[in-house]
Image 1 (tube, one colour):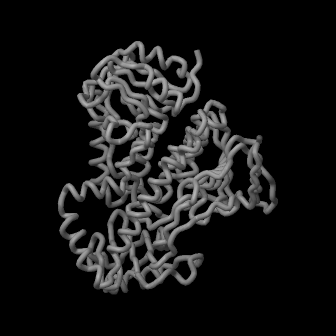
Image 2 (cartoon, rainbow, N blue to C red; image 1 turned 90 degrees about the vertical axis):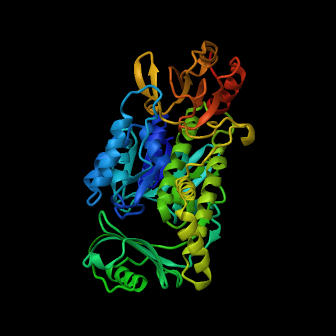
Image 3 (spheres, helix red, strand yellow; image 1 turned 120 degrees about the vertical axis):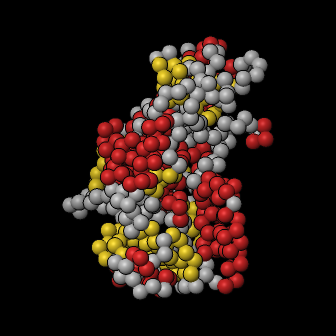
Length: 502
């Protein structure tokens, strides 16, 4: 093999996957057909589970630093974020080391942070290299690539992953079905200067002709018109067509100038039939496409990469237990299906048709005014409710099992430490909060894959011990009541980390 894994696509998903694979020891090559990063704004921010994933890898501070540099108009917001991070840096035993639940970002920021980290970890990233062919066999994958000089060559790898967007070449070459529903509207998102800003209402508005949104920091304009898909989805987006759409949807004769980012989108909703076909896998928009409401696509894709990376690295390194790689599809496919459901529901509510207006007024003007409903919908769109199957029925499951582990301050033999910081290396963590020597002894055979950490924590709702997977999700918990039984822990270790060594 030339490398262990070839990744097509150097967007946030492909670069995050490269980082995770390198942490797991897999030789990784990223191929990007463009000459550089796509600097068009795709999502206005990243949400909680993505922020937590970046925090576990020590990347959050750098991301906040770069995001603030380009956060014109959002100084007060970033001051509040940094104040929250400063409070979280105080080593008070048992305190929640919380992170912001939303981080505004600008075009190219996430890619820059992840690209720097991928190179630091030893991944190779080649721009102007387009995947033009793919053949797999029982032993590996051959990827045909056209370089910047137009000359084709081949790369041999154990696995190939398509992170190359909604029109994924990898998905098409692997012949993976992509069922769903076609587009019914045309939308635009633009980062521009509005010459008459006082004339446009701030925020999101459903109007008789569609949807318009105007937000500051810098000026971001979104429009949606429910008159069918664009005539040519491949045509370059022009400032004039965005301006015309904004005038129609807002009813205001405004003028746009100085475009920094112009994109076109639709409500095309599709979900790959499978995320894995033999030695070919999909992540991000290559696996699922939908409307960009709430930046769900970016966040969903990065979390795909975090789920897949350690499992694929374990597979190529030879220690993965049987079926581990298949849990990627089993865990992530239902999450994407829920996001597509959210997307379709939102599109239906925003349709300006008069028959929809009573439902829109009920949901958005009445129900969304209730704090509990607002919080529930925010968590749903942020994918906070995700719970993976750890082999225990949900009705009998401890609250933390299958969910993302919280970041709390601990008192370890080496001094105060945040739980997230213990996961920087991308390995599993067995956290013993009750000085249970028998548990640590049972897990000793997995010490090369799972870090054994003894600590004290004053947080009252944490169990006596917990096993955390490399992606930050809790695979096993030991309750405070009764004597600990090593058997269930050993079963969980074997399920996620293969056979132990003695």
